[in-house]
Length: 275
Image (tube, rainbow, N blue to C red; front, side, top):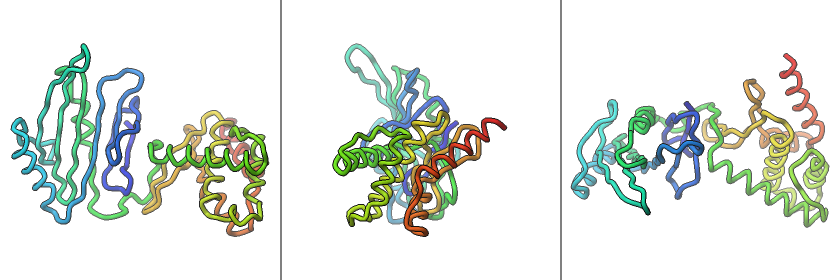
């Protein structure tokens, strides 16, 4: 099973290892198996002003939805309903759960083939955990979320444009591009001194590591109130936080030797592979 922690740490859940998160509407998270589709699972959460909020949402759903019934997932009270519909020549069934977590109301849906098995969705729902304290997740590394994928892609595109404009060269995210990143990082131009630019350079550096080192993949770090992309090398304890690495180096010494850091990480990976 994989673990997902929602932005802001409102809740966590576990989903099948052969499923992935996919982009959906704002504040709704979508999961499914991209290789062998057996249903789409969606989840969203809303925060109320008091501990009666969840119960009020369930009562409102019972009044507004004549097909909804009171149910329970584990120890959590919920309202449950389903509907069957047709798209083209195919028929599907969508199952709906609204769950009471006191101040938080969570809504889940699972759409699959008509009258299809919903136990996989119920297992996901049973794994939902809603912490009672803010910043409960002190240090967790989870599979990369769509949120961080967007940040990485946006940073890469920004660096592409900067390299093109400043150096009249292409940026493809390969090892040879380290010198181009270094030029941007060491530039005395005031616009390159902004924290946002340094963060974009750091994520582009991480993209080079992923592109050049098989087994190096993006993940998401949840650390108290900090949520950001990090790199992990398969089946090892090697974790690289490019944002902290580069920004702290620049803060402490004025710059960061990107080629030296790349070689250091590469050597660390090689030593692991030989062990």
